[in-house]
Image (cartoon, rainbow, N blue to C red):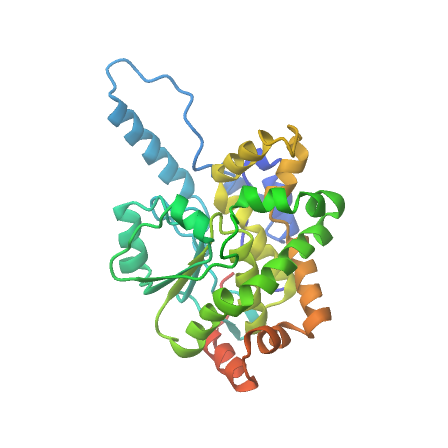
Length: 335
């Protein structure tokens, strides 16, 4: 099995961290040392001490959230103020002596709440020059992205005119995902693949082909579905194993922190879910098996990720070789 890293899972997901660490071959002692809750958006329930101003209380909460988020393993995760689920897509093993380039490909959730400090981190610390926004027109108008100096934002919707926020996708695919698990998500992700190839995903792969020295970031609303499918395609083209691709996708459950609970709560009040928490949790989940089933669908329909890039995006064999060359580095994996 390829080297991998620890996935920190909040208690609210009802998954034992010790169990997760064991599944990844990391051992109980490592798990115990890294078993912090990573919730970011959890509202504090502590009473405000007498004499504390609202600004002081909010400052304390922010410092606590930053401390919690900083407990995520870095790499692949990075903490940038106002940005959830930010991580490097590099560092994964391809062979014993090669891996995916680090500090070049980044993925995250929406940038709508990015603070000035978070924006500075993206542009100056990570060196990101270009941002690809997969959200629909409806989503981007409802929650505009923060302009980040030194970067160029390209709005390349996967679903141009549909509301494709996590809760909207959940409602659309409820029957799929609640009926037969990974296969249901596979059908939902197949629709994303069919919709996103012409403009959204192609733009990212063109960047990798043509601008190998300009780090990029791609995102949707939660950084889970549209972003996850694109990230999986990139890693598959690079040569990463399906098991590791699935585990990378699964990290979104940790990366979203309490934003995950926010989406669940939004679904629970919708009549379509009737207060069924189990169904809502399944719809917001990011399980490795779902992405591995999607990769299997790509293999059967397109004869692999290369076939998808050729058939749906119009890339040539030479294009794909150059894309792969720009993704892979002759260094041992760190993840």
